[in-house]
Image 1 (tube, rainbow, N blue to C red):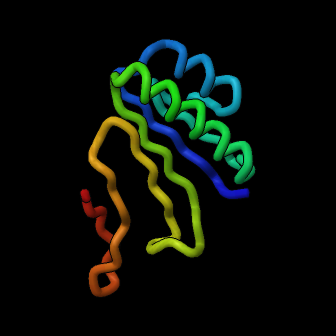
Image 2 (image 1 turned 45 degrees about the vertical axis):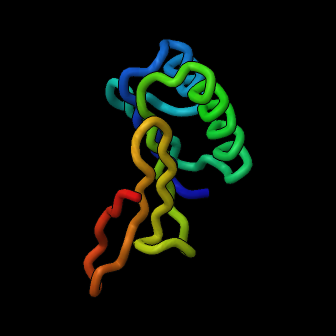
Length: 97
């Protein structure tokens, strides 16, 4: 169960309440959970995605450790261009799609 982090920007108050119920808000709009299971993380993302599809406001980024992904990090985004981590000759960079 790896650390999961969610960063929100310009979202409705409901996101803050929901995320605070499952994660710790360490700074305004920044939420962390040191041991969020894969199933809980997927359910949280499903709720956030559903709300964002209807409200179409703000941006959300979720990051967690994934040993099968480049850089061992997985990034999911809502409301901003998709991003992925790319290994460029041993240097990890974020590529916007």
